Image (cartoon, rainbow, N blue to C red; front, side, top):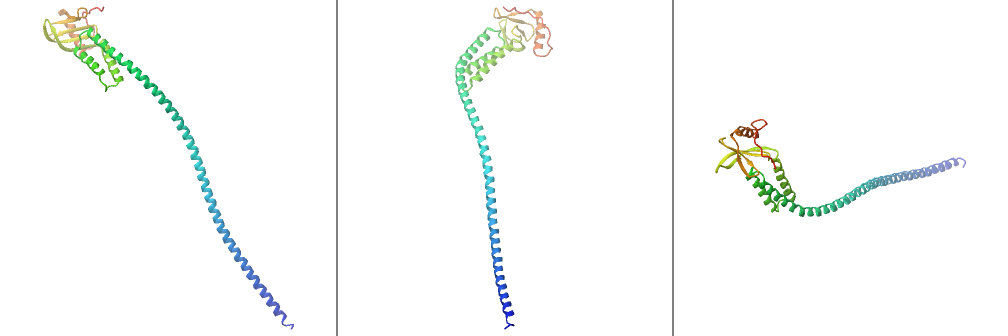
Length: 250
């Protein structure tokens, strides 16, 4: 019997080792499952963290966009208020323009009438041209397709032309009745100081007398100076002194 005990003890040890090995394997398997589950959970956590981070970035971007829109809207409100003020100012200006237009049209009519009277009393130079300009102004006032501002500009332009006549020298050709016969003559206008004619043959000359509203003959001694004046007016000679009879202004 003494020889049997070692074998029994060895069997028990072997059985115990097998049980422990099985238990250890079970623990290892469970640990592996836990590790796999933990890895999967970590992946889920990482995905959730990434999603939260992405949404956080979107939230920050949206906040910045909202802040920018708030600033933009505030600026638009300022511009809108400014435009409303400008509209109010424009409406007031339009009302004033209407009043001015009602006042300026009679003024232009009086200016044209005054210009017509002035031309009628002035020296008779460029008669056709000046009459045509006055007729154009009168016709213009009846036209609806021309703005009031353009009408006023043309009236002022006509006045400026008349003013310029008083400080320029000019030579031009036209027809004139001389000694009861219509003849072609050269006119020399020296501002509004003198209006002189010289026949094309260079034999007869005369000057306008504003007092009598007629041309008076000039002596033959004036013809050379008249020719000189005509050449100066036509820029054929440099400006120079002229010796011509002048009617004293009243």
